[in-house]
Image (cartoon, rainbow, N blue to C red; front, side, top):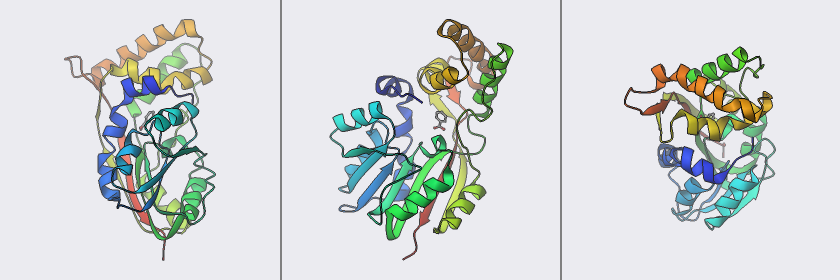
Length: 249
Ligand code: BEZ
């Protein structure tokens, strides 16, 4: 999916802002080597670095990495499903990134290898039933217009049980994962959200530019009774999967 850092800041600035609980769970300490997996535009990575930890951010998006570099952060391009690190980090942190990575076993294995013995893995991403109403509306409207949207929408939303199973199989211990419903205010409504997060999905479904405004209008109309509070305020039906786990000593 192609990312635009300016759009992201306008339509999805809540993503790093709402990463605070996961950051607290990590409790970064000065001097620790920490990998931020899927650092995006670096807004939350900067908060991580302010703890005094030595932070490296990785992401697969060039435009997002450019925004992170502009904040003075140390970042590299990397595929989270093929991490190239070996026993290098005291902790790996990740916010709102894992659901973009379908090969979850490969991610877990790469994080395990990247950690030093005793290292911790803490993070949060979309969990089972995430944005269920939005996904349903999107698929219904695309189907009504004759497109065949991919059923998963390109993301992976694990249950806590599946996450635990994958990570125990990768070698982690003390895996604690839980699902948290977190209705999330959308500052630019469902239209802003769709622009930032679903342009790639519409590309993949083959929707031409000329048809998009109508499709977005129909999705908005379908979701309005469910996700709009009647006073013009939109909330997305986000569900988070939050976890912590340890690599054995
Ligand atoms: C999420 O953070 O859960 C998410 C964001 C955009 C698209 C899909 C999921």
